[in-house]
Structure formats: structure tokens, C-alpha cells
Image (cartoon, rainbow, N blue to C red):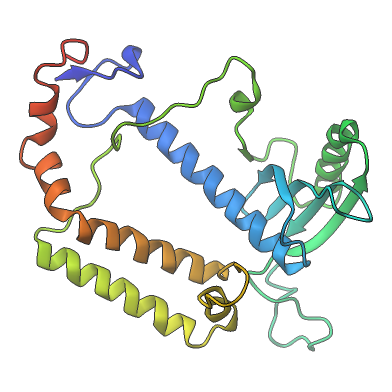
Length: 252
């Protein structure tokens, strides 16, 4: 048993710390929100903008961006939403049917002054509330987190994974999982022009589609586990972490 050095008030724990698990979950949620924002911006041709903030719900996005080279507005706020089942009904004609699962631009504003961003963000939220997309108490994922914007907040560098990864039983299983993930991605990419373009090294960097982004991330994760299986297995299963902390009197 030991006490988490980053969350000493969490109490003793054996393998995981609730505070670390919560931070990891929040980080992954913010990463997903920013990836969705990049995909949504790409759909309207905004490829090189700096994302300042993202406010995400399961069906809406509010994205504040900066483009110093833009001839229209340096600062912009774009609001996106996913279509409803009725709007993506296959029975609708092509002129009326919205692409299911794709982010659609719903509202936008722009200005040359950074001081206008808070009001534009407030207007965007009010638009979503007024149109019934969200309510005032709808849970929102903020990226970056509100705490990260405070001067006193400092970035935390993790020296190790806070939780044990899902390691396969053997090296052979790890290699097989990586191969399966690779085949699954390419089975998708063969029929997805956007993902094929993203893999083309001769063109500028492009975004994978929503499904492809999930599949390619799984490929990368399983590749890392397969390549580093021996070290991960020794660290998490064969006492490597315990031996490392045995002489750490602060952690003990």
C-alpha cells in the first residue's frame, strides 16, 4: 500500500488512485473534444486555425479560433451540431438530408479584437439554448480546462501511467492485437477517401474521419503495447513498479 504523491488526500491505494483516474478521464475527454473540433473545422475549410477554446456536449460544439492571416476576422467562434435522426432520415431527398454523424455549422461570429471573444462565446451558448440544442445545465467538456487558464495552475508531467494498461497475456497476443487493429483500420480506409488522403505522405497533413480517427488511434496504442510489451509486462505484472518504489520513502 502507498499514498499517491500527486493526490496525498486520496488515501492509501494498491494499484490506482481515484484522483489520477479522474484526471486521466478528463484529459481524454478534452482530447476527444479538440479532435472533434478539428474535424468540424475541416468540414468548413478551416484547416490552419489556432484553436483557443472548445466547449463540447455529445451533440454540439462551440469552437473559438484565431487566424492572424485571415482577411475576414482574426478571431472567430463557430458553433456546430450533429443532425437529428429526422434530419438524416434516408427517406429525405439529397437536398434536405443531412449527413448522419457529421458536424454541421449552426452559427458563427467573428471580430478583429480578442476582447470580443467572451461575448461571442456567450452569444454562441445562448444560441444553442434558444434553439433547444442544450439547456443551461447541460454538462460541458471545456478544452483547455478552466483551471489551466489560471496563472497559478501548473502543467503536471506524468512520470508513469497512473493506471495499468490492458496488457494482453503474451507477446504473441500483443502482436496479434496490433495486426488485427491494423487490418480493421485499412478495411475502413479502403472505402474512405478522407482517411486515404490522411495517409498520403505527399500531401499536407489531413484529418481522418470520425470513425477512422478512432481506428487509427487503436492501431497506435496496440503498436506501442506490442513494441514495448516486455517492459510493460515487467513493470506492471512482475514487480518492476514495486521494486522501483521500494526505496522511495516519500511514496512509502
